Length: 89
Image 1 (cartoon, rainbow, N blue to C red):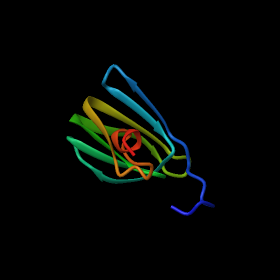
Image 2 (image 1 turned 90 degrees about the horizontal axis):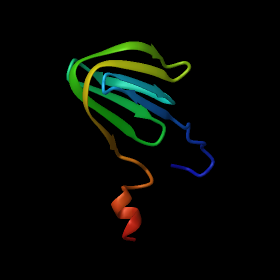
Image 3 (image 1 turned 90 degrees about the vertical axis):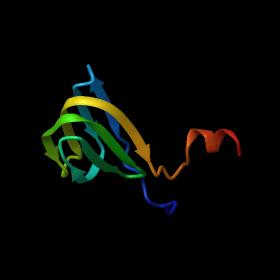
């Protein structure tokens, strides 16, 4: 990513593994009842679970609210690299 592009920060709040609130979202390219993929400015967040539902989506403001039974959250493709790769340079 070029140095002059400012990364849009994101905030993730998970309540009781059933309500996920995200800010700083750029796109939601994949969604179904078991998987939702959320594109952030510097990486992608994969949400896995069951009965997942996007109850709020505003790409203009970058807000997404997901409800259902959330079993896993995984960051994919971070431009800064994984924690392990940063620790063992």
